[in-house]
Amino acid sequence: MGNLLQGVNLYLIGMMGVGKTTVGRLLAKQLGYGYVDTDDVIAQAAGKSINQIFADEGEAAFRKLETDVLSQVCAFTKLTIATGGGIVLQRENWGYLHHGLIVWLDASVELIYRRLAEDTTRPLLQDVDPKGKLRSLLEQRQSLYAQADIRIAIAQEETPEQIATRVMEAIPSVLKKPVSHS
Ligand SMILES: Nc1ncnc2c1ncn2[C@@H]1O[C@H](COP(=O)(O)OP(=O)(O)O)[C@@H](O)[C@H]1O
Ligand SMILES: O=C(O)C1=C[C@@H](OP(=O)(O)O)[C@@H](O)[C@H](O)C1
Ligand SMILES: [Mg+2]
Image (cartoon, rainbow, N blue to C red; front, top):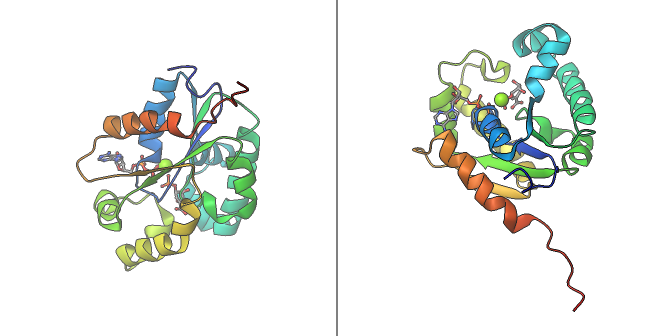
């Protein structure tokens, strides 16, 4: 499968908790690609957690770091990149994302909420009404996520492996076909 994408990067987008980080690792293996998680790069470069960056510097500063990381990562090839759920918010990020193939992992608020109910690592969900927060974030972002090349709708019982397989199966349908001169 190493040459399926011919070196073109694969970007995973979608709401927090949908599985970008988990599925991204599997896809990198299956594609014979390197793996990058933009949140990990940001946290490593800053020397602190995403929570701490939000607390110390605020969301706007985090978004600038996110754009910096994306702009650097997109200079490389043969990467699967798990992005943070808010990467779609900055218009300039789309110029970078479109260097590669963009896959939207789409799941319901109910599914995401169940997964993240006990999670404390998503600063935007440290809210009195985390489910309502997820709903309003999805409402704000849905039309942006929909600009992806591929949408994978995720049902409850699917394992990360099954989702990765569906992404792999969907890729050929969106690759440009060679122009026939016959
Ligand atoms: N297909 C899946 N089924 C069940 N749990 C999953 C699945 N994919 C991810 N998870 C779990 O959901 C949580 C969020 O996954 P993660 O990959 O960090 O999502 P994201 O990077 O999109 O925020 C983690 O605890 C992860 O183990
Ligand atoms: O949706 C968001 O705005 C965010 C999602 C997080 O990444 P995941 O989508 O990997 O959880 C992380 O970048 C940060 O907490 C902000
Ligand atoms: Mg993630």
